[in-house]
Amino acid sequence: MSGTKRMASPTGSSSESRTLTSKFMNILLAPISSTSKSPQGTFKVHELVVELSQTRSNLNRVRAELQTAIDQQRNMQSQLEIAQRGEDESRTQLQETLVQLAASHDELVTYRRESEQELRALRHEAQESARELQGAREEVEKLRKRTKNRSSNDALIRTKPSNPEMQAHEKEKRGIFTRERRDVRLVPKYRRNNRPFNEPKGLLPRDVVDYVTEEYVQSSGHPSVERLNHAIDAVIRQVQEHAASIVAAQKSTGRIRIEVRPPVSQRAALAFAMSKPGLTDNGRALLLDAALHAVILPQLYDTFFRGEVVPFLTEHTKIMDDVFARIAMKGGTSPHISLATDADYCPGSWATCQRWRSLAVSGFADLPEPPELNAMARALTRDIIGRIAWAYGQPRHVFEQITSLPSTLLRDMDAIVRDAYELSIVMKRDVSSVRLSVYLDDRLNRPFDIRKEQNAWPQMRSQEGDIAVGNYSFGLQRHVEDGGVSFLALPRVVTTALLREVERNAMVV
Image 1 (cartoon, rainbow, N blue to C red):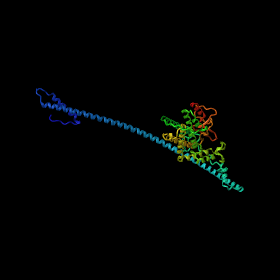
Image 2: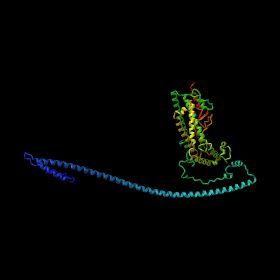
Image 3: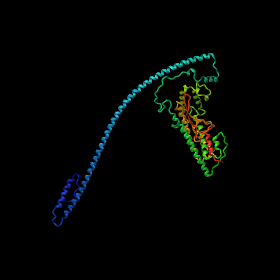
């Protein structure tokens, strides 16, 4: 063999390998009788060995490629099986979806048939109501003609007064409508039991006009009476801690300055107790806590909860409460509405009054927030800082100019004012089966009545003859149609039990 052979292709590698092997064996088995070796034979053996190694390497590479191809084929087969299973599952899901669509179509057809039947029934009821209403209108027209004839006959007997003031007085005395027209009820005899589709869910089962429950107004809603009381307590606690840290820092730097406070009347029991010598830090904190509650609660009550209708009581909106009271009165002719008793109110007009109240408050709720809310928050902030400065005997600027107390307190009071405004709207607009009202007796130095209020600190036991010297939390009162009044939550008040406790722990001077 002469020259170097080309590398064989993978397809002919087996036959070529066999040929080379036979040649190599022939050379090895040839008789080696001569003592001298031929250089040319040795070179051929070396070439055959090299060629055999290359062929073996090619064979191994071909085997590896073949194994890779087999693995790829297996992977493709596995993927094909997975795709086949996915196709089967999709086909099954499609069949189930078709079955569900067929069932939904049947339900839709049934629902449409029932809706058409209900619509026909409602149209029939509406036609009957229209006929009844037409009959009532005809009756009213007859009564109007009869009243007109009677008025013309009376005019022939007596002369109608020409003084405008006397005419206005006579009109107010008669009321808005004549007696005959008040006796006519323009209400159809039937009443639907089905709730309208556009009415909110979660209403009370006993009355379809309540959009929130009494428990929502009392504790679970946001805002509610309980949450509002808790927010006021939290703000006062934080402002007391902030003020105490300011005073402690002033003492540590030696810049504390005690101002001479003006004399206090004994009728202002809390302020008078804070002005006594020997007061401990704990006693001052308790008295200041009660005094700050006495600053916030009456202002919130007078603004948001004293009125029966408007959520924000001002001089311009008081007329709405007067109108509401006249609607609730029998005939609306009493000149002293504030002195009226439960017997003076017309039971039949309860639903009308409640509905009118709800509609009136809804009108106020649709308006933008009154600008007085911001002014009220600022006024409360100033009053609180002034009361704190007086309690610690410090100038106001100590708490106003060199600390962040005013900004933090203003932010918290603004949130409380807006919560009170929203609570007033919800309580008066969304509950109509009963009449809920926030309760607060702002009279000072009155006897403590255990039936209508609780002691703010029960551990300070009350005694007979204790006096209420301040308010500590709001209560919630419930009025019903028959005139009954009950408490859903009793208000808490500060009594003279606190003054006894502070005086007992005072230091001897």
